[in-house]
Image (cartoon, rainbow, N blue to C red; front, side, top):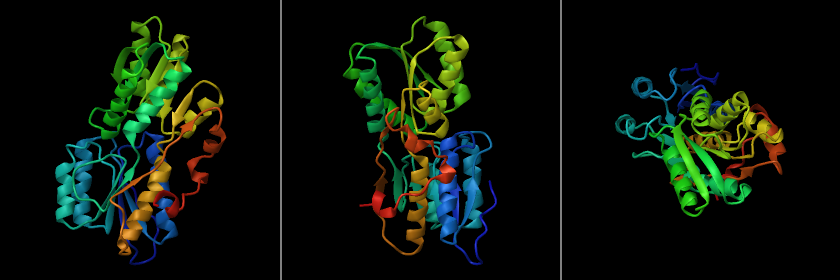
Length: 304
């Protein structure tokens, strides 16, 4: 948990829940929320598990928030089943919630995210086109309890059904973390003499796969999701094919603006779905700016 930003006296307080401190996408999300809050005189308090994606820690954070009673919560659940009851407790306490990134049953003032199944489908189709429609691939999945991962994998399955000449050699859980992605990829490389491509459900695992390939002195086409700076640099260098911009910076901006609009009594749409696009060698320059130097999109650009 972090200290709040320095607000004026009697400022509104936003409690912000993210999954971990290891994924750069969540760092971008937190930075964006802070940027919008600070510009509007609001305070933020961040609740980040010390152990990545830890359910017990996030439950304890909810208990803390129930005692502290912030004005509003921005919530990314670590588990869309285990966190249902804690959300009900926040609902019962009358604390409004902006749900971000990971759909979850409950009462929320809005959900801000993207269509993960479509992203997974488009990502796989993009890869298969690069491969000429045939070849051997491995898949790196995130945590099974993460709804974003399950939706992306559903998109993969749709794409597999349309690509009979693509052979899926193996699929493994890399937990959306670079070290885990590297570990799983290293095992794939031991098990399979030929791997043509790696379909990774996020950039962190894709970066781990690149590390494993380099250490094994082997090559394969690698593609990810998120558009984090480290992955964009790999795209620029030609070591990674592409990423899809499930842009947590823009999602964080939008969540913070939604929260402030709610506190001002403004109505919000039930869902705010941000568009995504592929980041590849044709356009990567746009994403080379660190998130600290990026500008939040206008509200009218994401809510129409």
